[in-house]
Image (cartoon, rainbow, N blue to C red; front, side):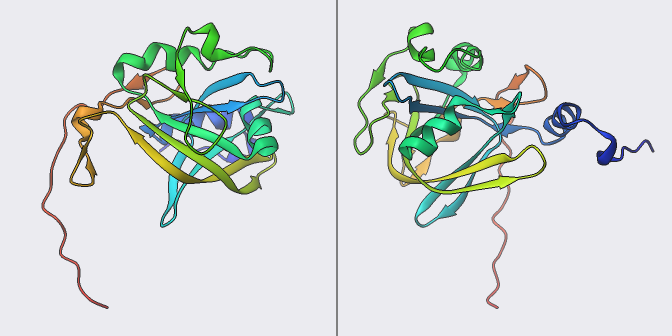
Length: 203
């Protein structure tokens, strides 16, 4: 069986390898505000939740040519951001929003997307996104030689499209989210398999 020693891999090659292994990944589509008030929009597939109470989300933001992405700089400066979940109809603008622009250029404007004012924070939320979560930064941790930043935000409020929330749970099929694979490849849910709940025993 072939094997690789990660110590021999450059950072970019290790990134390509691990993003092809850890699949599928949910995508956080994040809006932030720059120092000039420009709305930045970018997707991040190193994304998960880390706490249910209070609800907290984490995104991992790396550096390119030694410089952190606009999203990380904006979040650290303002401590506010909105995480959106995109559905299949939004796949093209989701993908195109990863195009790099100068900090004062708004991806929202470039892509012709509309926004709606947030309830508790200054960065706006995307009107078309089925789910938007207004977040305030709670933790920033750096990892590895590349000093990748894990940004953890507390969800201040959830916004849902009509029909997604049913008895406190998300109708996943109705949400129709997209996920990230390795490279410029994405996937949708495909088959949904429902298993019997596992019995829980008291400890």
